[in-house]
Image (cartoon, rainbow, N blue to C red):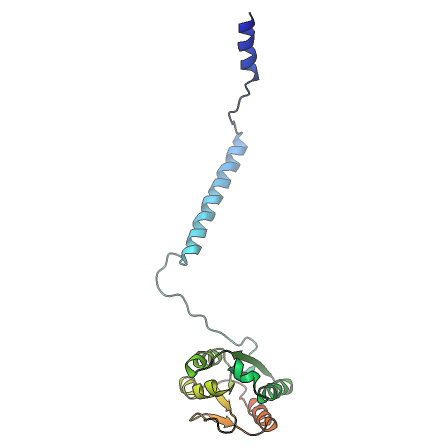
Length: 195
């Protein structure tokens, strides 16, 4: 009798571990599984960088949303920090911006050679800088090539005495005040729209 009783107790203490979902839970689990699989599929497509189509992606074209004229100041970071005319020219561009509908921006980057400076000049032209003012030998020497490749952009080189000047590009020299006044005048003369 003790043996039967022990078997009976053992059978009763064992809980039923079988999962019996209701129809509503089965539907919810199916929907969750479908959403997870769809998410994995979308993630794989996005991670692969393609939407299943072949061919080159569309080029991104920067645009001037405000429609205002833009003057840009650029140069080699090391060169600009050692010169006093850079801050005078930047102040002149900001003054021109306050007096007319003109956007101004500056981009000083480490570029010690013309080959390093040229992509930045091309980028500023692509961003619709109507006037690009360059400071420093690397940038001013790259202006000749940039001007040939971007005829709709006006390029101006701000140079010091004895610095070589690029062919076919306006060059501004003199005292800091003279440079600033000339750059301000040129910024105010930018046509209202590109033609």
